[in-house]
Image 1 (cartoon, rainbow, N blue to C red):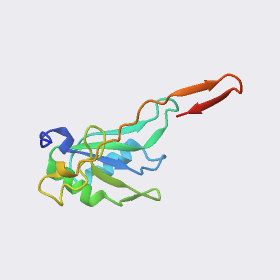
Image 2: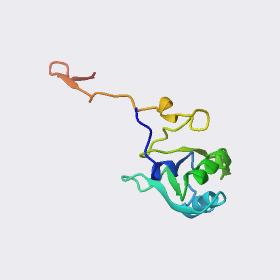
Image 3: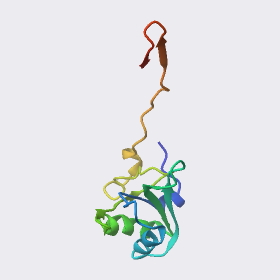
Length: 130
């Protein structure tokens, strides 16, 4: 697998375990303790309009993102400790970036899950999910 191209994904960190009552402004202030924030996106549930408890922060360079990962991990806000890791395309895949020379060796990809298939037995009206 080829190395990840240098770009926004190397400057973007996943911020998880965010309290539901935290505001985007509070989170930007916390992230700015590490360095200037280019953008912050708090993920909102489309159906309820409420935060999902995670977001993504983009910094101007990879070094600042690395510092955020080190210094904001476990940061307490409203009784919860933040989880911070590198993000790539919205998923944290660079978990071991500091530990190895080639972080792509440890890239974790989502498992393939086939679409659910339904079977209906009309005699007993039971739906089986395979």
